[in-house]
Image (tube, rainbow, N blue to C red; front, side, top):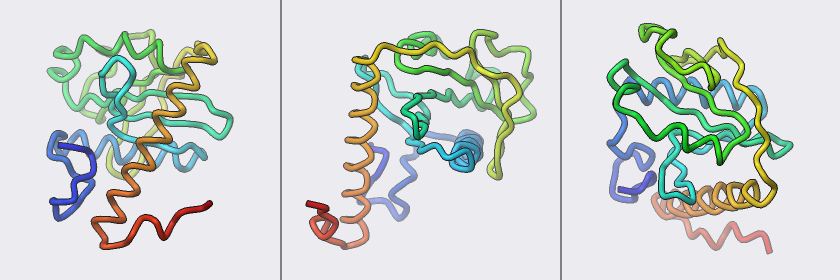
Length: 165
């Protein structure tokens, strides 16, 4: 099911995330929005993997946030090291009841809930190549535009009304 579904009562709930994961994501999105970044959940990367949340700064910096709602969720994940190639920063985000010491040191760490988030460990910054940055920026832009068009359709609006040309 796509991240934005025209058939759902709420087109932004795709049913894949638990309530715990959605609370974490909401808090992380608020954190980045307050910092002036744009966020996009569930962005498919060129590898076919889907990042839980991608944040894009006004200067073009890319941060991928891996949402982990439990110890089992982290232990079941073996794909997160692949994300380093597609971001300048990688951060794990979880709830306060998940032990911080289980998260890898080679990524940032934040605790979140539905109301906000706090960055407890800064992520190492490793700038990605310009060509790869362009690929991620374009993927972010295209996915955002496609989701906006689906939302307009869900609301009964003709998305051509928003054509800026």
